[in-house]
Length: 126
Image (cartoon, rainbow, N blue to C red; front, side, top):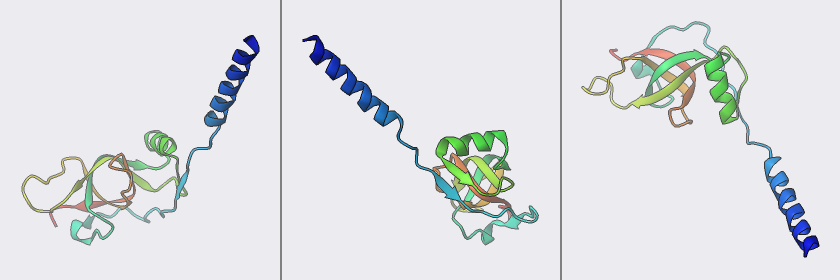
């Protein structure tokens, strides 16, 4: 009886160890940092909806690097601006869709608003 319990315990530990050592999925994102951070009109954003982000930082900043690391995202250039905690602004110039934080146009908005990569400031009034 004791040998059966020992065998089951060893099998369970081996299964847990195999699950714990799986490698996380990593996504590599290649975005080039803009030469300057010139504000562009929102109408020139052709990568998706303009985003309203609580903050915009470089990919190498501690806050951005922490979130990118948790998501398994590798950004090639640590100077690329990224938006943190973003939401889309669907229609520019219509009441109710305003941004009191940082309106930006980003190249990669595929992280459900948690982070947006390759952001350029936009003027939502143009």
